[in-house]
Image 1 (tube, rainbow, N blue to C red):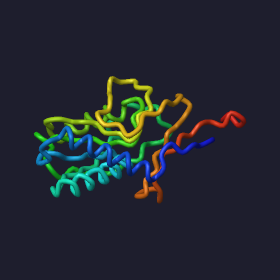
Image 2: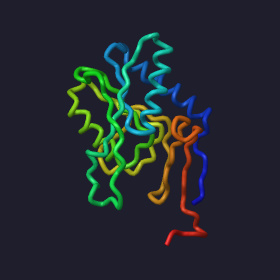
Image 3: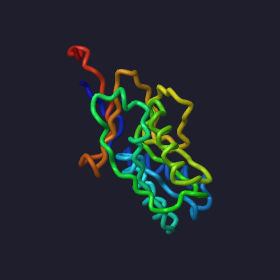
Image 4: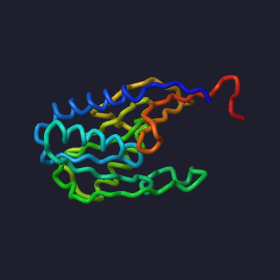
Length: 184
């Protein structure tokens, strides 16, 4: 596969700063604000945005981690069982303004699973969606409220978000099948 860097580390940092400003413009009262990162890299991004907001406001912000694998609608189509990560939401989400964070928005199915999972924890006042990359190709009527970068992709391409916390570096890669060596 051929790969192309879409965002480098410094661009990811600038993008997260911009998203943070957008959130702060719309959320006037951070007392009821909480971030929920979708496992795995959504958690990394949520943690970074949360830290930026805490530095800017001087106020502690709640952070939860959500695993959506038990809510997937494609278990029967998978060749291997999904890896189950942990869900850690140690605070009540009822009445809170939640910012749900994921790395890539594609079909919308992951977000649908996340919304279903969150409702098992309570009834938030609002849920806003933040994604680093929106690559299009929605199958469900789901749109992000805060988008780092929108990129046009084909269905044969893949977007990989690498984070320092998990991969040792920050980078967004667009992977496309090498036309000289198609998979067979």
